[in-house]
Amino acid sequence: MAEPALQLLEPKEQVGLIVVITGYGKGKTTSALGMVLRSVGHGLRVCVIQFMKGDMFAGEIKALKLLAPQVEHHLTGKGFCGIQGNPYPHSEHRANAQYAIELAKEKMLSGQYDVLICDEINNSLKLKLVDLDQVLDLINQKPPAMHLVLTGRDAHPEVIERSNTVSEVTEIKHAYREGIEPQKGIDY
Image (cartoon, rainbow, N blue to C red; front, side, top):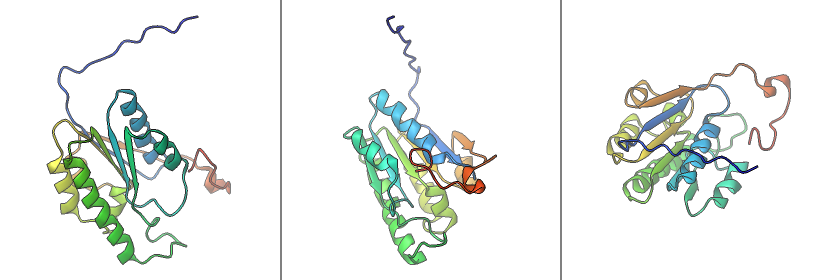
């Protein structure tokens, strides 16, 4: 049987959205990566900057490389600051996050991308790795047609206020709490 023809929706006006994905449940980065897939399917160019991830392998690292050149991916972090077992001092985490926010601004203003995803930027702000004025500056300088996606726990109220779409991921149950280790393809 042949696949049915799919209807393509076109908005009357192209508006670059600011999307926040926050909360304490699993799936914030995964949701943002779903937007990467949708964007690539529409021929959009995407830049993903991971503010805190970068000290261990996750499946998305390899997958995003497969989507090049439409997707550019930057791991800028040294892991999750303050999490037991992370050996890096706050100053190193802050230096990496400062690099990430400058890189985000550079990529945003380059005119080369339709979507910019700043993964874990909300956590970075909460942990004082980046400053509120830096994040608000990023939001304020966003080109009108670009989509900006900001993920991570503890989204700041001013960031939420300036966003078009905000989703909160809530944990109801998690396998880890049942003693099940993180699983490839699902958790990382």
